Image 1 (cartoon, helix red, strand yellow):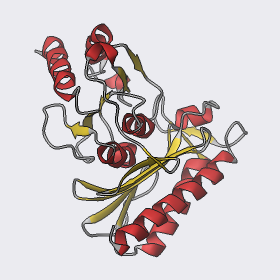
Image 2 (cartoon, helix red, strand yellow; image 1 turned 60 degrees about the vertical axis):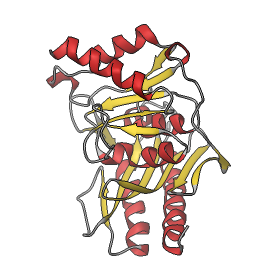
Image 3 (cartoon, rainbow, N blue to C red; image 1 turned 120 degrees about the vertical axis):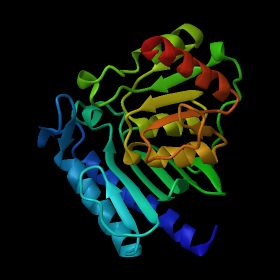
Length: 266
């Protein structure tokens, strides 16, 4: 790893861990919660966590862009940090421990650094391009399962589910009939990290934002996973749809998604 990427890796991890300590002060405690949409929530800890991370990254890399969930994009240039200060805010607000801080550095569609820190679970996943991925500092890899009937899958629903006909229900039905099971726990970053450590075998979702998936994408890729769009083209956090698998199951996953969507939408 070059000195620059080593610095980025270290800054990202320190910022995510520090933000994790901050948000844990508000976990299962009273605090300000407001609505961003019909179902989506934001808390005072989302804003405080993002402010902290922006400060740490901006100080270390003033020429890099920073794109976060709760604030305006800042900076210019090819290097972009995607920050989700609490991925899984609804879980956080309800006292559910499945939430995380996600920090990622990309150059266009190329993931360079990814940190997913789940403070309530006591787990940190991290990865850097060409270095590999780690779960609590131990190397992690995707699973070796190669049959759909052995696969444990994970997905989510679009945030605008009440206003769209493309709700993921067709795809869920297809995977439910062919795989061991599906889990929906409310954090895309954690879902992707857990593809990277072999917990899950298949993840798919659409209507995503780059801060939702940036950190998890780097971890899944560096763990040996295969990541594409629904049509099999190159994955890009800016596009908004993603399939991530252990590689062995990727063609079958794409086929299931395509068949389900043909039946649903023609």
